[in-house]
Length: 125
Image (cartoon, rainbow, N blue to C red; front, side):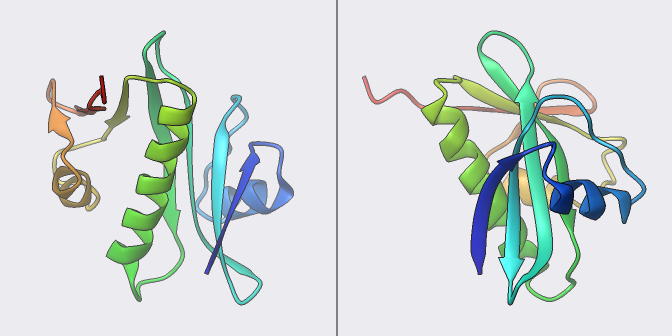
């Protein structure tokens, strides 16, 4: 599997999002997960506030290794966010029953209100 770092203008991302009924046109940092030349997952984030970014998409085209693929994409987004010197990352859900809630909780995201979860990056200083 190969992770490709790109942006919201990448046609592979545009087409993959459309296949889920979603159109993303805000400036984003985008990750595409490629397996055997085919995109099997994508994730992206955008600026949320001066200290945080927000994960705005996480689409997985495979039921096989779904959790493993999600972890891989989220962890890579977090690394890039830290490189951009964000102090935290947030993700919002439509409901607490969202199938991805458990994955984010396993990755140390804490709910700060009913539908918004946040992960603070630990400082090395």
